[in-house]
Amino acid sequence: MTSRTLALSIVVTLSACGGGSGGETGSSGPGSSGPGSTSSGPSTGASTSEGSSAGSVTTTGITGGVTEASGTSTGGPSSSTSSGAGTSGEPDSSGAASSTGGAGGSCVDVSGDYGPCEAIIGYGFDGTTCRAFSGCNCAPHCDDFWPDELSCALGCAAAGGCNPAALHPAGINKDPVQPGSFCDELDACSGSVEWLTKIFGKVECEPASYPCEQGQTCHLLWQGTLDEAQWSQVCAASLLPGADLHCVVWGP
Image (cartoon, rainbow, N blue to C red; front, side, top):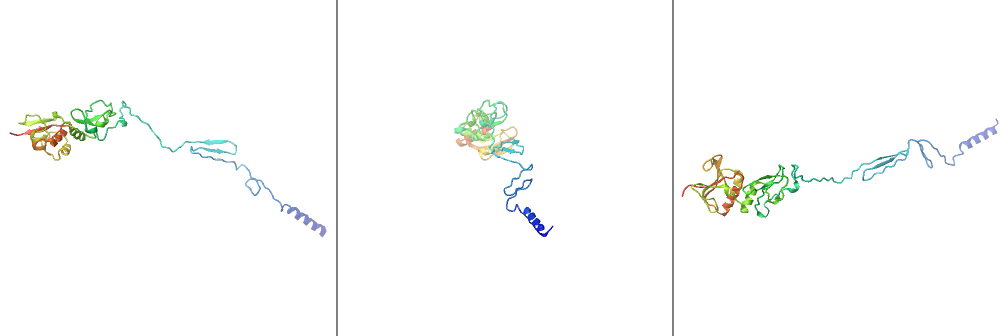
């Protein structure tokens, strides 16, 4: 081969290798990309996700199938509704007794049937004394109940209520106990000392002695005439459960 022929072969070879330098080369294959190139393959696919307040998600796979998962979670407050059964043995909270009792300073006889429930619905006057009432609903006397026996007794006494059956003359005293009665001492043979103290301010108790036959004798008032304020105290004490009060006169 002559030197001319060799040189011509080199030129042809170089032209073949550099012929694409002025253009763009596109390649297609898995995992490759570049300007003006498109890459597709099994490892890629169109995926679309859509969220909503209801918590739904939609995903489109490469096969064109659609998978949808939805759940509801609004985040709003839950609500429940309950109603008093009245006859199921459960109290009806819609008929709760007043925490103050004795509306308008009255002392109302609340005796009645409030249902078979055993729940305490309040404390009220039964025509004789203040005691606990049970039932499912306090209606129609919700405003006439009190939070405890002492509140009931004080409220009813302030409204003019009294229990004469719990007031007894003693010693040489034979007269009914009433406003203006004279007592050498007014004694209680039963009842809560704490309650009596709250009514009278000061109570002195000792082992049972006349007129009390058992338990203890609590001295509530000493020698004097029962004035209006003291009579209200006496009536309040007479309205407590199991009240047993004695106006004792020792001599002329």
